Length: 461
Ligand code: FAD
Image 1: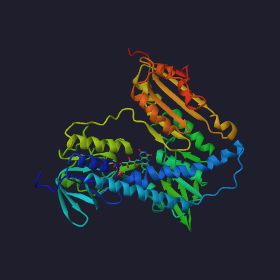
Image 2: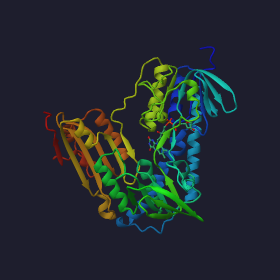
Image 3: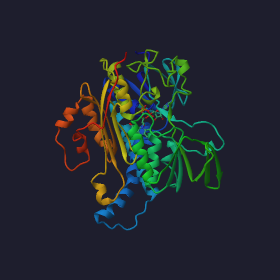
Image 4: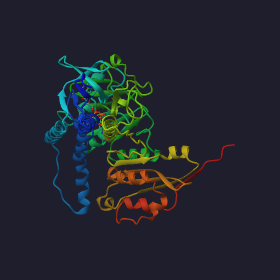
């Protein structure tokens, strides 16, 4: 290794890259991490964390609205975007500092620079310096899709810009039907903006359980969010500060901002991957890797969103950790991708783990579905129209609960714990044997006794 400058060069100081660098350095490896923008990456700087702060800020208006039914009189409340933005920026800068300090403390070296391949073992930095590394980890994440080029596309912002808007839009058009689009639709609605969501598919949240998709859409519409499906924005005109979005179905919508959240692509462009001989996975455009996150070039690995598999922070972190354990800790560690619990921080939240009803019916011959849709106790006095959905999918042959889907308050917190049950292969009998916590919404999970639907697949001839 002595003719290399470092044992490991990590490209990208986001969730996955930072974890990998710290763990590898802990094993005694000489590690350098290059970050071209800000340490912390998408999650900390312009993803999960600032988004969650916006969710909290925007949700407060609902608590204020609920208060009257409980006897509170609250003088007309107002929200100041610049104050929130400044507080949020301070917190993000604090976290960025912690990320950098943690890497430094691990013994790895941080560089604020872009790094691209010069050859399979050499990286070129922005200042022209070359670094030779025995192993290289590509952890460059992803970037928002911009969609097709059409007249006025330059007026569209993405999730990269949405956190730093100079002012809150009174009216916003959001194109997209995935979790990021829905989260921002609810955030802006909470801030009092007039929100129109435009989505080309037939319903939001493609890939989620059908009942979740229907329930969340209805809940969002109850809050006054307009959801237009089966159409796309095809042209945008700007007149002064106002934008007019023209839709494929002939309609047009005026707004102060247009946000596209139409998916993300892996950050593989202009990286010199061809000089290193690193192959792309033709199925998804990400870097092709095996179960140990190793590319076709044996000393080059890739983790996180740049592989475009399951694009979530905890997955990138696990992959980074497993890579460092495998390569520098000398013990082969694979990430287990089964039953990963996830949440959508819409309002209300969605929490999901395991199979959807459709997936379970395709996989098992006997499937029982337990579903309840109810008004939570808080909504009785608050007068809120919001309803909760809870759904358990059971492989009726083994009685194992193979899927759990929630829409409602704190669904994200609940699904983390339910994820443990599903991971441990809890049976419906285990759920039934658990005494309820009363009064709570979650008690419904252990009190559903009769299947709402039961499917038996006919034996094949
Ligand atoms: P990143 O965190 O994207 O880090 C990659 C880093 O590499 C970046 O900092 C980039 O600047 C740097 N880089 C790129 N190219 C180079 C180069 N050539 N040289 C040097 N540096 C380079 N996930 C969740 O689990 N929960 C959520 O609630 C959630 N919400 C999200 C909300 C939004 C709006 C977005 C956009 C994403 C969200 N995600 C969420 C996804 C999550 O942010 C990503 O899955 C995660 O950040 C991926 O980590 P990573 O290490 O692969 O890449």
